[in-house]
Image 1: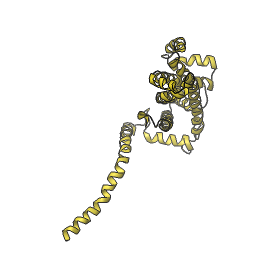
Image 2: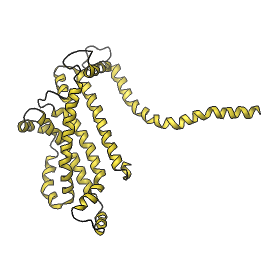
Image 3: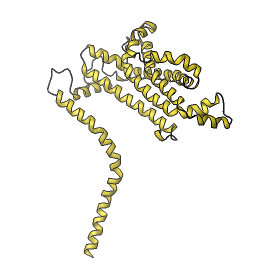
Image 4: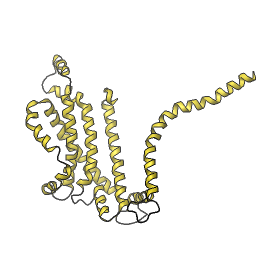
Length: 283
């Protein structure tokens, strides 16, 4: 009896441990794995720069203090204090504005190029010639066409987002199974109606891939775009800080761009998962 009671007690005490392991560990494991690599990089950065006042790369703690000062002030109280929201909102408006315009232009154009041979033969060769031209090469021409200021930045962000959306839309449209068009025609769907009922739904996975790439490139290009004489924006303060040798501000701007860009990508992925729940690759 004593042995049986002891065995029962051991099973009772081990049950919560087993339950915790099966319930929480699968949730914590991806988070721990995701944090391990940046934590290692942070440790290497810290031990490589701490205690070296002459180093051009500040230690992580100095960058954290600068981020705090940019956001709420109270550290340096200089011209950059409490200005993060101004620069962040300026950059967000240019990124999302240029991305939205790229989506409006590239989506229908990509569907036409992918579906209509005449449009493909007339328009696609020119676009393919212009596509390898880097955005930085457009910088002088953008300043000539649109002048110094936000319009040039807006145009460069548009260019950065345009081609990924266009190429993936064309790929998605041209990858639609011909049997879908035959089935739609048998059901009475023909002509332009096939664009909305057949082509667009079938191409949506590729379109969302292009949207993710386009939005990512938009955040990459924003620093170049804000070299065109704008006074506000994350790229603007990064370039100003570089000239003033304020490396902690440069790194702070990079961290903010990376964080907001990551959140933007997660937002697009969330929308894609909702709209593409039927797709095996986006479930």
